[in-house]
Length: 78
Image (tube, rainbow, N blue to C red; front, side, top):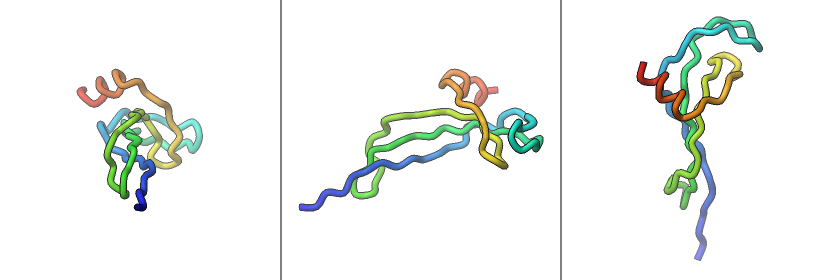
């Protein structure tokens, strides 16, 4: 019997975020707050989430910073 398992990552935008000038590319843009969830998958179907990380990133070059769950929640609420 063959069992296929692995991992995959999904992303979900939580908020539009604040406007910043990116230190890497210099563009002034709104940096969205994004949640990345890592999943254990079975037969290519995500089954169990095992890690969530939150980031605020430049939409042009993807430079940014990691946020705590509380920071991301506050930014998404208001």
